[in-house]
Length: 485
View (cartoon, rainbow, N blue to C red):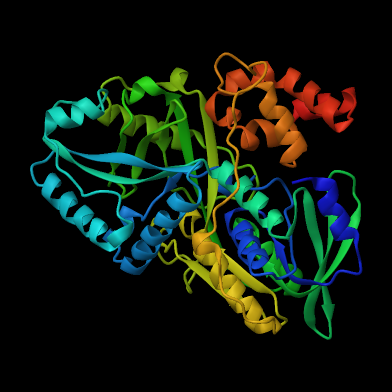
């Protein structure tokens, strides 16, 4: 996956694309992968890095969505469980099963949550990962040694999926390129081309060297997540907003704050939110929140009250409770929730996580909403609609059983830092084979160093930037600029 080769394809004005996709997060990459695997001429343009926004800042779960049972979204849960099974088969180096326990501190909770999770198992059908069980107090404490034991009656144990979101994005990008797509990061669409009132292509600018590209295509798809409305307004300046972003944050802690390899789900807090305490890459992730209103931005910042909220609930459920000084890293992401017809109707926690597909009068196709678990289905739905509208030859979707290409980081070469599981070999490969163009590309997404230990990243950033500069032909000014960012 070499960026110069991809840019050369964009510069070739003789090529008329079937599908042009704006956005390189989970949704856009799923569409590109589906389109290219069907043999359609496909181009994807991402203004930042692949998954740089929301898609690299998830709770790291591939799951059916236990909480959606509470709101009666049976169809979404069934779809999610089916897609969970497909991802476990198609991306085994990135997605794996993970056990969860729902602790019970009241007598009825084991039966109440057990009933819901038994339904969860039934909805999974042949894609199930094992039957729900009901361990007693000792069984729960054995799995989660740091869980508060006072008043614990036992719990409900079930299985779901866990993944590395940014690595899955890279795997999808690699596979799309291998199937013939042109997939490029750090290229921003700045204008929609219209012919006779219909969207017929895009003008895009390389944010690294300001080169402009003009791409013509049979259909343009807006898959930009929380930036959906800004692209829609390129087409219709007065378009009413359809996305209502909600912010979730996560705190990264040392693994001792669980003490085992089983995750904890807290199904309902006082204000109705769902929280997780999850083992991930030899750390523990505590999250998430559901905060609104929030501004739409590529790199949202955690709010102090969100951090306090998570620490408060951690202290209620964990024997050794984390404090501010125990936080290794913090990350925040925005969910692109589809707003209800009447603005202000309900909280973001009540909005559906299902996806929406619609087309403007001038032919801009927009896919928004959804989540990582169902992105493959979103890609299939979008390409089916796009092919029909654009008059493309009918071809079947292949992604249900399409293995994804990925080589996980190995930690080879000189270690980046003693607190991180990565080496300089991972930096070299990220630049050489995976289109990593900035220090953040390498430390946040090709590796997950910035998500594991912010202090360690500050220590190793200078030598990583120097290594990248040598590979990319950059000077000292570039290194200073990257470190400042």
